Amino acid sequence: MHPLDLYELCVQTPRSAVAMLRAAHAGRPLVLREDFCGTAAVSRRWVAEGLARGELARAVATDLDPPTLAHARAAAAREGLLERIELHTLDSIRAEVETTDDADVVYVGNFSLAEIHDEDLLSAYLKRTRRRLAMGNHGFGGGVFVCDMTGGPAAYQPLEIMREHHTRARETVRYVWRHEAGDPATHRVRNSISFHLTTSDGATHDLHRAFVYEWRLWPLDTLERALLRAGFISIEVYPHVGLAPGQAPLPIRPTDLPEDWVCYLVGRTP
Image (cartoon, rainbow, N blue to C red; front, side):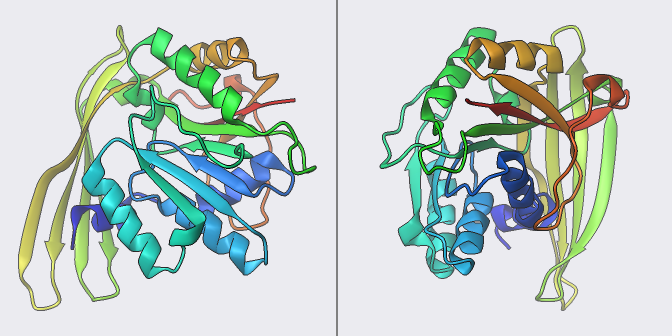
């Protein structure tokens, strides 16, 4: 299996992510922009669910890596979704993308906002994001920005988590997430993902450090201030839990998060 397919299998939950995005918007959103999209798994799910309901759902997906976008394009084509998804190979942090409509929802998942290491760049990105969001264009309410983030003492300490997954081809995948380095003073971390694949005939393949991340884990209060400065009118925090379509989580106070936390942060336009 390709490492990107293993990533989708072991890391991503597009069904739950789309349920969160729709619940956060709380209206009838049609257009999603997914920055740092990787294989655009969330965009593909967004469009597929919308089309199943008879809606003219669309997605704009951006990522810096051309081979990853090529993989996303091939997956969207196989699923018959390519006509409804714009895929752009660009630097999501700095570049503008002109589209045919504003987005109802802008989503940054998999802690990808931590790819931004500089606070000025973070502010500039959020200001551009604010401009990309709809102001009730479709009559269904304003736009929302949704991202996930993690933090707490454990995020900076050595850690190894293993999980086992199974493919439809009866392959076994051992997924390994490692905290390799961390500095709470600078909020910088280095993490990696490795895979160990065992095929149905017993052959094994190791993909050591298939993905490596150099992140700055932004504190919640820093993100909240940056969102307000960018023009969002309200900020909400939600627990990072798996949702089924139609479920609506309740916002929580940041002080209700555990010491080591993962959450969704939602910024709203008028």
